[in-house]
Amino acid sequence: MGARRSKRSGLQVGDVFVGALLFALLSVSLLSLARAAVFPTGSFGFSSIIYTAEIDAAQLEYEDDDDIDGIFDDDDDDDGFRSDTTGSAACEVFVNAFPVVLQCDVSHSSSIATSVELWTGKKRVREDFVGTFISGATGSLPAYFRSTVALPGDTVTRVLDGESFLLFNAPTQEQGEMRGQLLQTNRLYSLLSSQNVVPSIPSGVLSRGVLLANYTRFADPNDVKSPPDETLAIQVDHTIFGNPESAALFQGGTGRRSTIVLSPVENPRTQIRQQLNITSTIARDVFSQQSFFQVSSNSFSNGEIRGQLLPVDPIPPITHSARMDNAQPVPPYSPEYGEHPRGCAIVTIDCSRLFMEYLVVHNVEGAVRAQAGVGQRGESGVTAFELASASSPIYGSRLISGSERSALFGWQMFFQVFKVGKAEPVLRGQLEADNDYFAYLSGTQMVPPVTTSAVGCGSFDLRPDRVVDYDISHTVRNPSAVALYRGKIGEVANVGHIDALFPTYQSPLHGSDVRLSSADRTSFREERTYITVQSSDYPNGELRGQVLRLLTAVCDPTGGDPAPAQFLPPDIPASQQFGVASLIPELYYQEMNRVSPASLVAPHWLALACAWVAVVVLERRAL
Image 1 (spheres, rainbow, N blue to C red):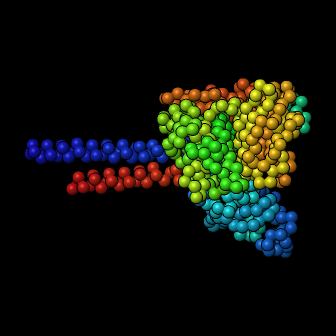
Image 2 (image 1 turned 135 degrees about the horizontal axis):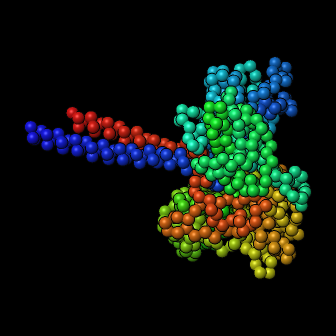
Image 3 (image 1 turned 90 degrees about the horizontal axis):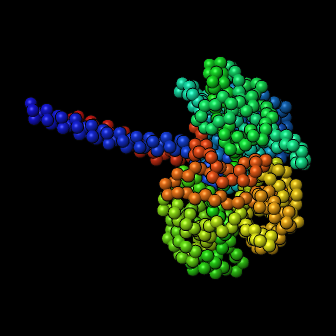
């Protein structure tokens, strides 16, 4: 009896030990899954890009049906059909996925749609079918859904240039019930969810919504001398049917309870369209991710859905920049005839997580590999990690190690690019802070915003003799001019032209041949200067980038520094627009966040594997 008791006791101890071990592995796996759902894939758009769509029936009007390759007939029975259904979509392009993936969160009021598809085509034009987000019987589509479509290689640029749209199909409408062009013309968005409400409400409540918003600083964009007349035009589609009671913009960070109303909404119906009058203080709360939108109902008077307002394309607080050329590789690369390898890189880092994001723009044809290395300038160094891709532009992000952090802030990290047929790198640049100023060039900074796949970056140094030493790379296909202007972030283009155009507009641009006046030097130092790249398609500017100082942050070895903040609206003094702000890391997170589909696969299967092993082991022990 004693022996059996001892054996049985030992077996129970073993069972407990094995069960505890497997439970620990399962817990770690599920924790990884939970972390993937909390941490977005990118804070500043260097690893994914946000597009939005305002969906309605008006966009179905085609200027000339004969130009649509016979898809529609002038005698269609649905000519003149106008639906009062609407929708809002916030979509994310995962540029580093293979294939590239478009993930969309869509909230709509359609009751007859049978599918939602992605097509290419400019406004009022339909060209090629790309893929189906969702389909079902009439009336069966959920009012809110998240779905993905893989983008073929030849489609990615079309999507990034704003030449694609979401189409809602209905059985009785050959043109479709409604459609929405994917653009970057909205400044802000939010994914509303019952899971975000504080204090929490029952988990069975599955209400959702999408908010899109545009910020306007001046009623007359050409009158920047008058006091600001700031507005926030919001569009909200949500799934609280029948009993929405109130809606408002609140002050408060993610996960924090707040009753401070910044601006109420007149009608909280399922389709909210309203222009909110706001102040500069409210604008600061909005752009620093310290505001949220909430809709309350009769059932949940303290909020049924809530979502933090997030910028579509925030200006990143850059800590390092690199001027890349063919002289820095070890050994230096001797260009072939017609080659002029050059590029730029900018890096931002969240010290609290050691999460680094980067953008690299270069002109290397046939690039096959790009990597980060560790080593001083002039040393061959060692490979630290591969960059996300090789072809320009390179968007990427990475959780770096403590040693990589030390190399980055010790000015011993570099980026380099390899091309086909060459064993050694042809382009390299040391990540440093020697050049005090940088510019991140995007179409979203134009006023009004421009939707374009083009992007750019630059580094600048202002010499004591008022000469600007510059290095700029961009991907604009047909540039016509590159110039400096006086103006704050968000002010209308061409307010004050600096009397100095860059001598060339083809990328890359580098030199020390731009001299500023004393007044222009003051504007440059106070971050009231921006650069534009004009093109034949956009003569007023396709790209714009504010010239800003590098962030003087130092990540301590424990990674305990707070996360930096993106740059804020133009009325805020430059000294407050940048530096390590008081923002805490949670401001970058949102419960209904943007998560790459691939990021959920590994922890999910690890959890299932652990559970299966636990069942097998315990079953065998029981035998």
